[in-house]
Length: 255
Image (tube, rainbow, N blue to C red; front, side):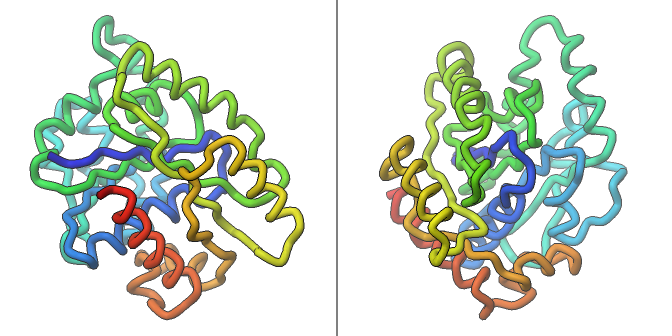
């Protein structure tokens, strides 16, 4: 059965989607079977994998709200072993539709993924930058959370609220949920500010903070506009090398 992992941070612009897509790609290149679920109405994970239509016929919205089987929405990426379920801008209205479900509205995604989880080693959910019902659905379906954090002053802003949401989901909906990793993104080791943020994050998360830090990198930022993970766009750039190393560290902690 797949290990289902959410990539979540309520603060936008922290490298959440970048980390989800590029770690998944690095794992797929190692032979792991990986599925990305784009659970954000901005559709960034979808476009990073070559799907630029923001209202595809079959999407995660169709799975949640139109009773489409998850298997019907799966697309292949340009990397063998890496599949994805695209998002749709219609997903912005899904929280309202889900809220009308009286019983089990927090478990809709979990039920849908249970139909396909034995096909994959990992299912990564790219969560929206919010703590609403969609994120609660993702956390309820997941065994773990990876938190990408930008190494800047506001990095810890709102983090306590997110951790409280995880705590509540763990208490009432998913007793197995844990924060399994924290990824420092846009990291500049020469900066005193970045080092200070790292020190604060280590105090909170300890050894759950990955040793590999993701640097600021132009090629990494360019890759999504070409619909490719950075490993296909420029495998020798600093960003690709960092995510490749992160995949090794991720797998070592999974053992």
